[in-house]
Length: 94
Image (tube, rainbow, N blue to C red):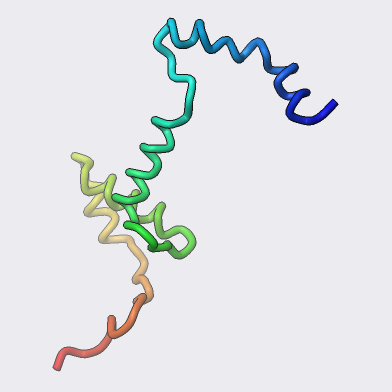
């Protein structure tokens, strides 16, 4: 049996789309895909890439700034100095 046909046969009980629609449930991933695209655009911009762990670090800092406790102060007290990325980041002022 072809793989796709086997999948449909084994998961037919999960494909009751008429009842899902009637219950007001989403039957596509469109909303999730749109949210991921919006999130990515806001966090990193288009056609930009993070170094490993960079995106997670940005989200942690953003959460710290939005929190109402002392997380942001703790972050700045204990953070490791990061290496400069890009041109002229460490160039002394003229």
